[in-house]
Length: 342
Image (cartoon, rainbow, N blue to C red; front, side, top):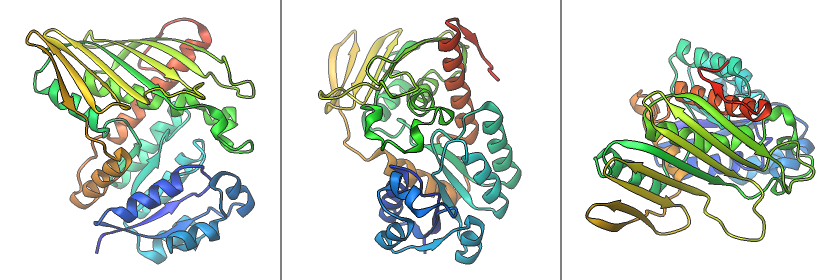
């Protein structure tokens, strides 16, 4: 018998199906139920493409309105939360006292106060929690990380991360992603790159400067391109490129470039090889073609079973949210922002 799990919240374009498909593929997990939070089925259908009843039928799940009732009646050990970004904190505070472990669809919060409340609820009740997905489990990026940690390029001097995510028009017109309060790409996309640069740097950001603009997304209240410069406590320099205006041509979704004292590493999601540059010349390493969300959720399930913290701790997720918000403030004020931020 695997970890009995449920889905909390169905008003999402991507996450309910993604979580269900992953959990059904993990041998140590058993997805048995979902809770629609008693939302209007037609409202959920705008985002999800199906009503809660149709979703439950697709995955052979018991449908509930109340997540607390679902957890108690189904004797659940874990839940995946996928709701509006502003609502996740309330759901975590609702389910954590029941002792269930939690995977929160990123970004888990839209304010530093909400992120702090999530951390408090998780730690007070001793549950295993993380937020994602991240780039950490991408095959190429993980291979680059292992080579870096094994000393392939010496000490890290600088890191560049690119994240490209198509464009906002992939979301239905009436979906909540268009709401300014939900943070848009300034939280949901910066999240990926902000986490991965922290991971490689092994240090916290002390100062950030960001420039955002909207070039091609006329109906969007958000930026669709962003450039960010970061300085870490350990002197590593970093930069982030965000592209959310890509339509009609292909561009790598993830890209990482590390420059160290003895070499450099570069990897792109859309090609099969990463590249290592050292004094011995240029060599390539094979990029594993994997489902990084599946691998990340498998890791979370293992952590739930073993009672160990995930690769991305809930405190890590809090720091990433703080960095995303600092970047947004910098772009709004056209000035560097010092961290800690909040």
